[in-house]
Length: 581
Image (cartoon, rainbow, N blue to C red; front, side, top):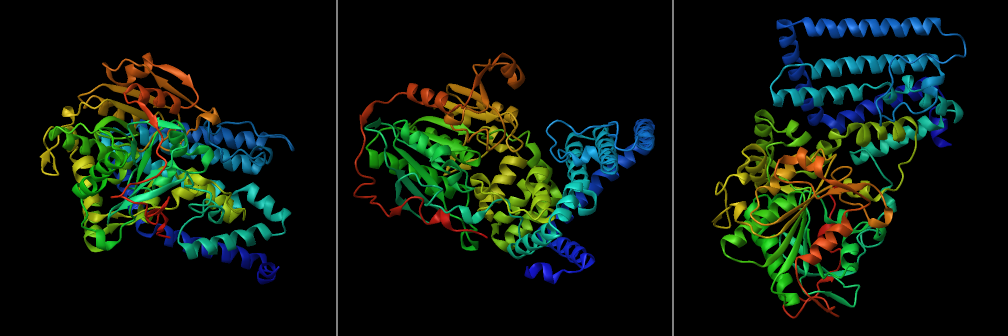
């Protein structure tokens, strides 16, 4: 009631709301927004220059747009009272912004919706019709979509009928609540995507029983408690991405990959990377191999007294694992019996949407920032990944949280998504320049790590690649080419959905599908044409593949760690609980 008394004047409420919204967006985007706007303007300047040289296509698109707008206007004028406006244009499949009935039932808002869609489609067509080089074309398409989405009428109080109706029904309380949500996020410095109070690591996330058996300045190594009477004599080491926290693999028990793998009779070890401060700014790729992956392999073998282990990895964790295997094979060390790569890029020739943010000017600015800060802030990573899916990860929450005054619902994956980690500046610089810019990993002996030249073709370890068909971060056709770089037998599997949902898909959910058994010799498109679609999760398929790689059943250990590596603390450990926000 106190909030209602504070804003007794509706005009005052709207003014305060608009002022604080503008303040928040400036603080949230600041430098990133300026970079986006600069890229947008540069891309459209290139398009304008080209269009002046060959204006025919431009004239045709504009003439079509004007005709469509005229048709829409005439249909609106000719519509009878109480009659729905005939649709000149409709939202694309999957566009949920205009799903509410008010967008069709009210002629004014129906007109606003259709007018916006006509304009956005026109701008998008103009961008797609540009005859620019590949890199600039991608930037033009991306920036155009981003700013077209940002200007959607759904994102503003005065042009969103759902928001206005809710404000009327609640006598303005929804806007008051939205303002409070906005002020709370302004204080936090980020958009709330989930009820963060609903989750706590070790309580209802990352609860698979285990213990930390080793730690150094870079990582903790967790060993999980077996849940079966017998286990494979080859333990499984999981190498998660250091760009995110590991518990995406150990969310709630009902969708935990770690728990599932333990329940299938594996002794599981997992690396929990440290969330670095400026003091760790000089940690490099060699350190992630020597103090991270290679050290974890040695410890897992010693604790279990195994001759060989299996390894699984995700994203940049897979890139680390592949370079570690190249080091081991150069030394004729066959400690790893099999390697699994979740949505992992080894060939960086096609970089997906992340490539939009990688150009000479941006890299020069990034290098300067890394030199000053020592680390790449996880906050900037969250912003980058959010802009790739802006409608889902930015604008939908602006509408729900601020315009409608709704509290975000608990969602474990979004809790993880808003719990980012920093990266050491030196390591990140090496990663971006050697992988994304120069694509050196595909070039035999172009890189030297841990004192040895890196040649992926020397890796004879059997490999399992799981990619995701809608992955915008690690495009599946590029991850497919990574299979051609290995020297051993390769199993390639393609899952449905994107970078996260394509991996985290517990079999009990019976959701989505995956493809197997495509012909690998004639490229990714031919592979998909010849592949077989299977219902549900790929996890059981992977477990069967893992069992075929060898190993015997032994009695499950009753204790964790050993004399040299005694238990330090219960999983998930201290390192993963350190937050940036």
